[in-house]
Amino acid sequence: MTPEEYRLKCLAKEMPIFPLDLEKLSSFSLKPQTIDFLKIGLPKHLAPYISFKTGYKPSNSIETLNRIYDIHDEFEKYVVIGADGSGNPIAINTANDDSVEWLDHEDYFAGTYFNASIEAMLQFFLIYEDFLETIRKENGEDAAINSNFTDEQFMDMKNKMLFVDAKAVHEPGFWKEELEMELANREYYSSHD
Image (cartoon, rainbow, N blue to C red):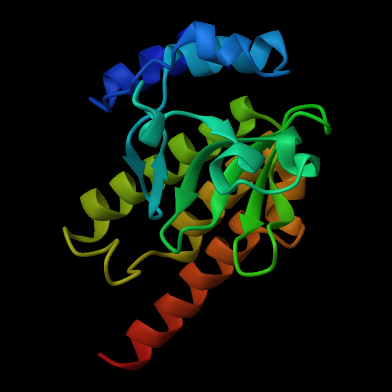
């Protein structure tokens, strides 16, 4: 997926994205391809409970982890682009080929795998959005809330994710936990009907 294909997919989904400041992006040690995606923009919020830095104000602008939290320079390699619903930062690791990591704020920002790149991460969110849209359309408006999906619908999403970034599905980290939680929630809701 190219940055332009990403932009067009967001437009088709009527998903507003907010371009990040090129001058600010250039101040980090990011790869050109990473910058190309970020200058197209990020949505403010995405399922599952993710918010992204989308503004020019310092409080909502991307920044290195060490500057945000005033901690050791060893964390300068992390460019924070967002957070999960619990406040754990989502960051690009410039020391690891611009991979995306999920940082545990309760464990001194221990990092776990999120995606291989910003491109893979954005593709995963689009795949997940497609999954939610499909189950709402086919299984009812509350399907996403009640984890009402078939094995086929789940496997379709998972297979698309595997094609993009198999490590994110198999290794401990954000997406592996999210997929396991979806199945656990489905089991819970189906046994409490």
